[in-house]
Image (cartoon, rainbow, N blue to C red; front, side, top):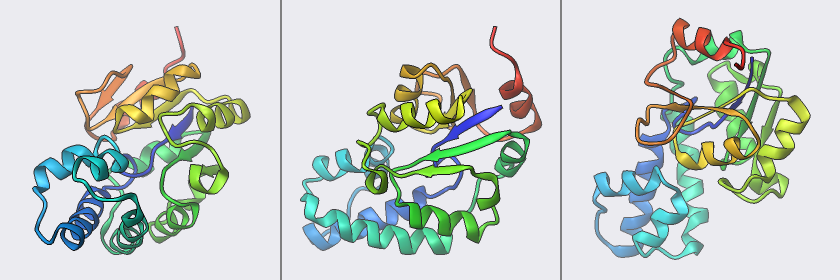
Length: 196
């Protein structure tokens, strides 16, 4: 099986760090705390939409990225069982909005870098951000992938456009060929099934 992965919220439980970083930026700009439940709901769509919804100017994105990088490095663990899926795959690639540098640091910290054949970061590689299809088209053409695994619809929309099967992780509200809550031996078996 040849897998395309999202990183944040799919391989690593980075949402606590993302939320903390966003709330810090919100408080710096607005001078008050953000509603964390609402902020997380918007961040699970895209951080750009969260910034717009909460009226935070785009120039604060660099501060957000700086905080998120620091928070993710100290507190974001991989989801239980993810290494089982990674080790069973023939090919693993990542398409992430995170920088390649911070992605590599996180993977290396947790001993997962060895499983990945390539990391595509739109900001580093010049591709438009998800859900635009360009990065997915590039990586699929290069590796002839089978599945895309992500926790948000923007991870799976471009996957469908290039003909990949889709797996939604911990998000029953998005359309996908397979929906899973945790990484288990059964998930590995399901991902190994041939196309019918």
